[in-house]
Amino acid sequence: MNENRLKSYFAFTKNERIAIITIVSMIVIILVIKYLIVTNPPKRDYFKHDLDSIVAGREFVMDSIRVADSIEKEQKMKKDKACLVPTGNSSKKQKTKQEVTRKDNTCVVHHEERAVTIVDLNTSDTTILKQLPGIGSAFAKWIVEYRTKLGGYCESEQLLEVYKMDTARYEGIKDYVKIDSIFVPNKLRINSDAFKVLLKHPYLEYEDVKKIVNQREQKGFITSWQQLKTIVGDAINPKLRYYVDYQ
Image (cartoon, rainbow, N blue to C red; front, top):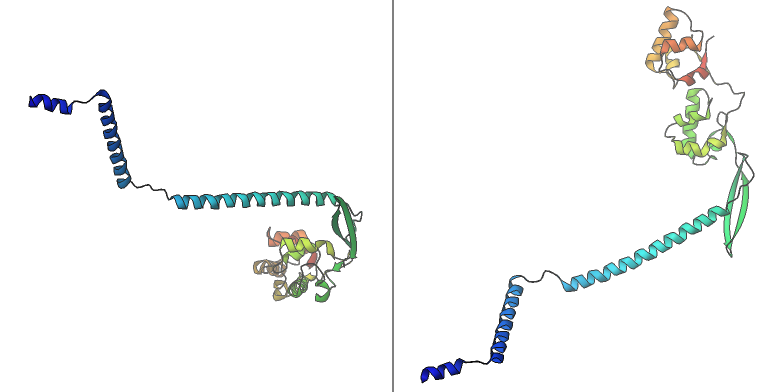
């Protein structure tokens, strides 16, 4: 009797069993999720992530603005370049300045010509040399000092041998310098000048002068550039030929 009553107490209908199973399953799932959260907390910082997203969005907008400005400037430069027209003046003694203005997308070019002094490298003093673009007091002084050591400039390219003169600075002044066609440099008397005199020339080294002096003292005078090249050797500076007197 008691056994039957106990069985009736634990007897459940089909719907009751489904409800109990569902409740138990939900409790188990909740416990499992809680355990996972406690043992493995989320690594994502939602606040930081959202802040980073805002910053990234701002940077994207700023980059877009910069790109748009760059494209606009590039297009303007191309239009201005298209506006440039030849001056029709090829004289080295004139320097043309062009100013481009734009009105209603129409190019207006203004020309202004001014005279540029052409400087003689062998007669100009430091005051005149300073009129050259990029040449200040120091460079003017070095140009004159090297001119004295050489005995005068025979080629404008010799300016590249001046102390601290670089290619860029030379390119900026080469069209504004000249050497008179009748200019004759101071020359070395290769057969009679003293050892110390020959050694002062920028194009002669100690060993070169030694060979020259030995030649003229032991075998006789030097009479030609070809002979001098043979004596000194292949290292001889070809520009030395401007400064040699064989008398």
